[in-house]
Image 1 (cartoon, rainbow, N blue to C red):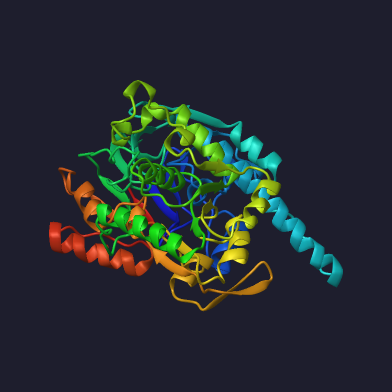
Image 2: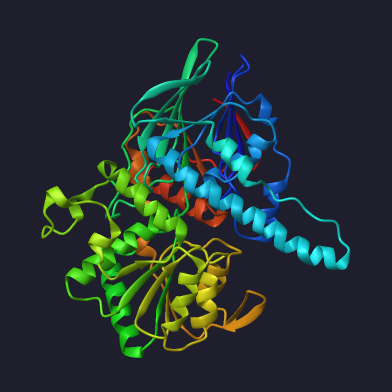
Length: 469
């Protein structure tokens, strides 16, 4: 029988990776994600792959986020020569994500080698380079939702809308071995049904084996309308306090949602700030890709005051006071604003990117506000701040956390516990269910809830586990 190996995002939220193997020798990889967060997790990125990359027949990608795609350039540099199958929107976003990631790898290696050279330690090589990323991008093969296609002998794939970010997919793999076909469904990252731009995740009814994410397996998100009102209140309070508002945000997905809501406040006369800076070249590029694929977005939530024929997904149309700052010089100029600015910048978990420079200038100021609009993985700077640190070390110096910190879980792009249970409950025949992509305590909470509400048993695999399909 065909086999499935659990190689990444097992009892953790990053590093998504699963391997399908048939008796006939076919090998298909689902996702090839980067590990993020704690140093011990990031060290896994340079560990040997638990398979020979050159032996793979195909790679199938659920979506473009780096924790699902970020090791593709390294996979290619170590010998993978097959196609990388993804949705058409993911194919475009992937170029943005992988080239940016390659630049970070090169810059990090360059920085570390400077001090290594000074103390006589051997120099290191980047995890991968821009050339590796470009080679990976040349192996993309885009597909439409609901299109069924063969990626290798005995493995047929269908992508369904996961509602997480633009192009995100639930991956259905029909695997035939010894004349028997088994249906594997990998949820990828399932979207929050309250997203203002994404359609709800596609409901499926048939599967023999399901891999389901569990990022928020222990909780439901706060009421969405209440979250939006809380954000509006925070902006009013920041205006009264006379400080800036910092919003660390993922460039793809979260940023577009935030711009939508700020645009709504602006049209309603409830945005007191003078200017909104989008200080992320990647997010600026993502806005253009969202505009290109606006037919895949649910734009019915756009204000009725906007003529439907003119509902183009250009951020500036939603939010006239938005200023996109692409260059380092434009980014540094933001430091002149001591009050009245909203600054949206990456990275979403505060582990790098331009948000760190804005922390340096604002985090220690009591009149400023920090809005954390999404999940912060263990070991990230964002998680340290959310957990109440009085000071943090960044950019080689320690900065006091005096700004008011707000966590708005209702903006998550992931499904909450009840949404996960509702999605899986539609499968007619009770399948084998495995929980992936979550921290262990959250997986266990979801496991118990599934048993209590559906009387379904769900397994929590160990890293490296292998099952027969």
